[in-house]
Image 1 (cartoon, rainbow, N blue to C red):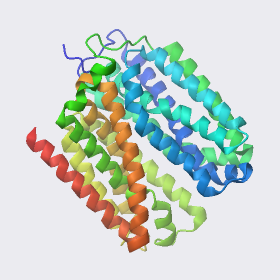
Image 2 (image 1 turned 60 degrees about the vertical axis):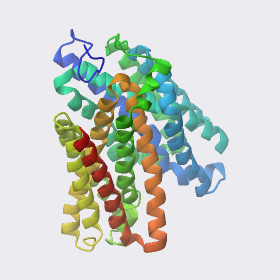
Image 3 (image 1 turned 90 degrees about the horizontal axis):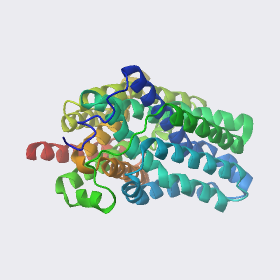
Amino acid sequence: MPSSSLTAPVVGSATRSQTGLQITIMAIAAFVIVTTEFLIIGLLPALAKDLGVSIAMAGQLVTLFAFTVMLFGPILTARLAHIDRRQLFTCILLVFAASNVLAALAPNIWVLALARFIPALLLPVFWGTASETAGQLAGPAHAGKAVANVYMGISAALVFGIPLGTLAADSVGWRGSFWILAALCLLIGLLIRLFMPALPSAPQRTTGDKQTGIFKDPRFLAHVALSTLAFTAMFTAYTYLADTLQRLAGIAPGQVGWWLMGFGAVGMLGNHFGGRLVDRSPLGSTVLFLVLLAIGMLAATPLASQHGWLIVALIVWGIAYTALFPICQVRVMRAGAKAQALAATMNISAANAGIGLGAILGGLGIRHFGLESLGMISAGIAGLAIVVALLLMRRT
């Protein structure tokens, strides 16, 4: 029997309703964890003023989190791959709770940086093992859909977590927001402890240094590179979408947040479609949604002043953008089937590298060619990703 959890479920006694509940709990955990990661974006002005630092310096907390995920995720996931999943998830939620408490109590930017560094170490461990566990629970026929359901927590956090957290900061302060997140982490940790089954790693899985053998597989490395390209294309334009809506589309600053929320809400459909199609063809679905992504990003800029057509472009863009999250995850996990937890974490690292590169390339594009150039630049990167995906399909 293959060791891949996407092809062999390890929990056969659970009923479908129990499995659905367990995956739902993991999706809620994902929501809380991703909200912990991105909430700070909405809190930067308040905490910068309170801690007496510049916005630019406070913004480095975001950079610290992203690059910590990128650098340490694969190593820690390989080292922790052998731990029972229920125990691992519970510990991760407890660490997130403690880190949020530390952030709420932080007297200066340096303590707050420590409070951001600690959970960043474990976020990719959660994503790598949660995605794998969802596949284990659901079984081979529904693994992709299960991973997509867990990834729904990402979309929900991006759509609702950040805006709701920002609203909470207005009413209870930025420290109060971290207290709320700490309480939620404790609650979800308790639910995992009560309702998740014991899920040790598969008997045939290699652990520790043996997992790193996937790094010698050129095809696996090509899949990781493809994810980096895909996320670079996604975030070259998305990082500056709010600015695009305000400056090019003429959307009032007070309405931009609602447009972004609509963009993310439509993206929920992409999460659903991506989860359905990736089980049939990981690379084929990657190409499909990269094409739609390029079309949406390329069309949004020239159509910015025509709000009706802009909405159509944003719908196409939003669906493709969100669909690529679970698609890339499942695709890389299958390419690294001998060490799926590590493979999944490599995809998270690739995603964070793409997020950082996209923001840098988008910023350079704006500086040298103007905001109007982002659609073409991001679509060009998506085109390069499509070429890589087609080459991988041909070799398959």
